[in-house]
Length: 371
Image (tube, rainbow, N blue to C red; front, side, top):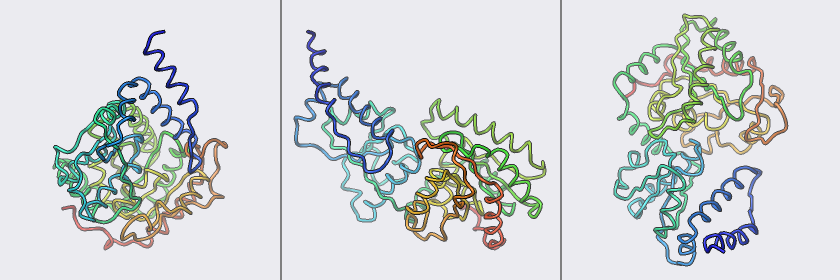
């Protein structure tokens, strides 16, 4: 028998007995991750065998891998802020950055030094570096966004924005109220969002003729992929359908497909938001602490309401909790996994909550000019 085939068969006999311990009900995530790990280990068997046989390893923080998700990325980058707050950032010798680096770690934390940061275009390349260099890769997770980190991201992002873009941001600030609305085209979709959002905007414009709308959706990063472009095109098409249904005199702006650093600046210009529960809240709640209404399927809504990832416990200097719809205003599409399950909800219920927020605002609540 070919020796490489024998090694693979030997490894298969071991990994078929894998024990996976799940701490919460996310059946797809853990299995997919373990399957990828198995595949990487089989295809790099000699290096893998050497790695597990060498006890002494160099600790290397890792960020931007496993999840192409802004929420998880912010938790990871908050871990680096924790190190900085405790004067430990200079203790890092090496940082491994995966393909999902939403804000460019080296720009946000220049203290680390570019020579200590190793960037990878794929998870496989990152895996190879770990086993070939005998790293003990660790995730620095901190589920709390403090003001210092939010300010870091804002100042870093502001430096990257063009003059033309900042002029559009300033133009959008001339409206009141400025409403940020997130469109979502994959997983946990509000099925009637095009019509629902159009209805909300039309009804608001009756009482607020100077209303301004910023449409949010999928972002671009400095490493955007083909999948990103598909999502962006889909959501822009949805936005265009909404715009076709609302009065033409309403000022609208498109943040869909904008760079993450541009959104991190633009979101400071808003007064309130309508966001999908999950990553849609990262800009509006965690980076700028703006009031708003969140919507999601029944299970995700209950989970967010009780666990509080959008609530003050996860954000320093938080003003108030995100307003979630009551469960009786939401209808799940089916009984599939809660992390991907689509739903419908009552747009009137969102409108009512938005009106309550606007009535608590005034022109003086608008933040100073961006600087």
